[in-house]
Length: 202
Ligand code: GAR
Image (cartoon, rainbow, N blue to C red; front, side, top):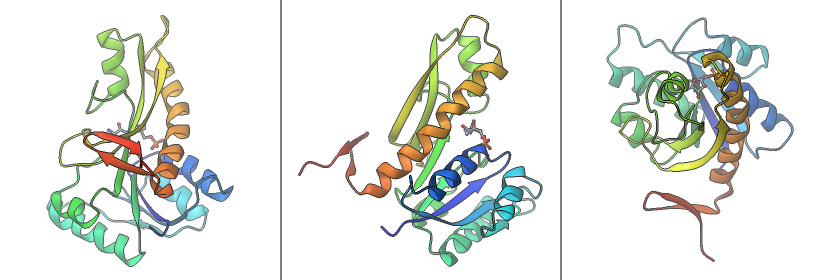
């Protein structure tokens, strides 16, 4: 795999920035070929522009999901992307997308999956009374927050936590986990075995 990353985001973009910082210092052996947002004013896409990266807004409004995904796939292909990283991209991907990048789309989710998929995962963990939560980087498949797990990092839920404080501590771990996961995938040293992502046996 040549190491060209395509980042998809919808908002703040802190995971994107953590990845970009680790690319810049050589911790991730890759380049960011393109950053795409489905929201015109996402701070993340503005940060990508400021860093001089290829940054595109591809609006989903008024398009069927399949049409929107086809436009994004075309842009990723134009930039010869090998690995797609969803970084706070708040739209489900259609089969068109996944068929174009089989086992080459990663997502980050702010819980220890399979606990608390979907929206507001940190709030879900608090309301459930979990003592431990965290974050998961996983391959994207056709089901929500479901694909094979690449890596996870745990975070203790403290007695005085609210959604804000817990989300902030999980986010710190997300920034570490995403770069670790990308490096694992790009290393070519791991493979999917059933639902597990394991080091290849020599
Ligand atoms: C992150 O906490 C990420 O895990 C979450 O959105 C936030 C994006 O932050 N993603 C999901 O909940 C996906 N189901 P960022 O824009 O600062 O990277």
